[in-house]
Length: 263
Image (cartoon, rainbow, N blue to C red; front, side, top):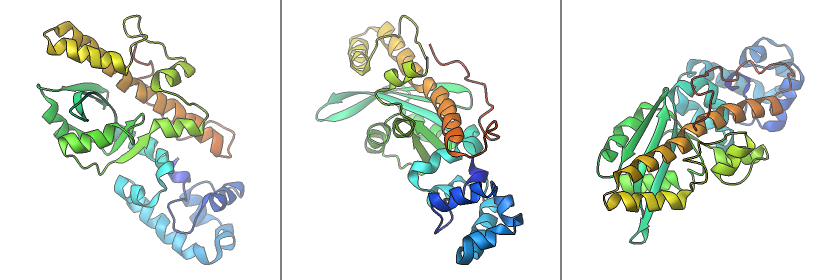
């Protein structure tokens, strides 16, 4: 989708972008090659050419596009930067008037990693900086603010919050409810567990029940890995919804490493 995007060019809004697509100017290269571009853009033409040239030079620099794209359109970066995208989910307990992180789940590069309070949670600080793009569910309101406060991390990453992205597609509610709308089912052991259960599991672990920690980590793993499936599917849905070509989206994700949701 990134090569079809013009919203990062100053002065170009949704209406003008759609006008380009309507005139079969679908990509940056189409814009540069089409004689209609100058007529459609008028005084914005030279600026747009400059930004297209900058975009091509910065195609591997996510910061360039993060700075220029509207925040609600950062989903357009997903395909190009999917190899350096990480799904993130945290568990916590509320203690002494603040949230204490118990488990951080991170799924990226085909690997699931769990960071546990009292064990290896500090290692998360280095690991997260091997990624350029973070994917969460309600992370804007919860996960990232808690991590910033408790681990003193500043996140320069581009961030896609699936709660708000999926809402644009008509999928609302909590993560488990959205999973069901996508046909995702969890194992019998995980089905029905909630954030409140995650708190209880940690308390049991703190009292010496190590099996409770295993269950908590498995629960967090389901939450985290299923974000990858939801991101892949919602990206394809949005691509087809906004892009005027009726054929197969040519930049939809082809990565099948997590084709099946976590159970």
